[in-house]
Length: 330
Image (tube, rainbow, N blue to C red):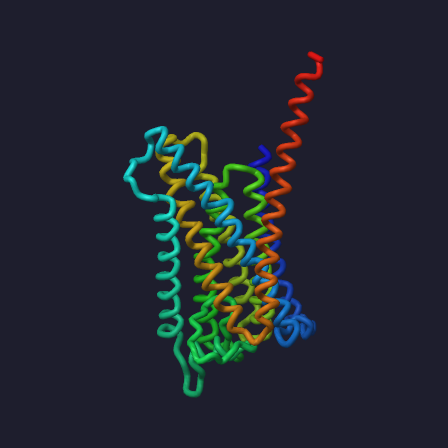
C-alpha cells in the first residue's frame, strides 16, 4: 500500500504542483503583478541554470544507479524463469540505446515542425539564432538545436508564437511521458521517491521558466494556461501507464517483457534529456561554466548520499529485527 501511496503522491507532485508553479506567473501578470524578480538575466539566469544542472545530475545518477540496474535485475529474473528469450545480447543496454535514439529522432522531427510549420514573417529571426542569442547564450560559432523551454516566443500573440508554443509543449510532453512511465513501473517505494525527486527538480524549474516566458509574451493567458496544463498532466498519465504495466493481475511473462522494454526505453530517453536538453543547452549560456559543473556534481553527490542513507537505514532495521527475534532465547 505504501508503494501505491508514493505513486499517488508523485502524480500530485508532478501534476498539480507543477501546474501551480507554471500558472502563477501567467495569472499574476494578467492581474498586473510585476515579475521583474523572475526575469532571466544576470545572476537570476545563473541561478536558473544551476537549478537545471542540479536536476540533470540527479536524473543522470538516478538513471545509472537505480533505473538501469532495475532493468537488468528484471531481465536476469526473466531469463532464469524462461519468460524472456536468451539471445546472448546485452538486452537492457540495447533497449536503453533504443530509447535514446527514439527521443533523438522525435526531437529532430519536432525541430523540423517548428521551422517548417510555423510561418515566419519578414524580418523574423531564425529559430537557431533565437535559441543561440536569447537568454544570454554564448555565440560559440555552433548552432544550438535546443527546442524545449528556451524557445523564444513572439511578442504579439501571432499564430507563429502559438504554433511554436504548441510544439514546445509537444516535445516536453514526450519526455515527461517516459519519465512518468519510469516512475510508474518502479517496484520499490524508495525508488519512487528517488525518481520523484529527480524529475521534480527538473520539471518544476522548467514549468517556472515557461510560465515566466509566456507571461511576458503576446499569447493569451487562456492559451498559456492550456499549454501548462497539458505539460503537467502528461507525467501523471505516464505514471498511470507504468502502474498498469506492473499490475500483479497480469500474466508474468507479458509483464516482465513489457517492463524490460518500457523501462529500458524510458532510461534511454532520460539519458538523452540529461545530455542534450540540459547539459548541452545550459553550457551554451553566458554563465559560469564551473558553477554549472559544480551544480551538476552536487546533484550526483546528493543522490549518492541519499542512496547511502537508504542502505544504512535498511541495515539498521534488519539488525534491529534480528536482535528482537533472538532476545527471548538469551
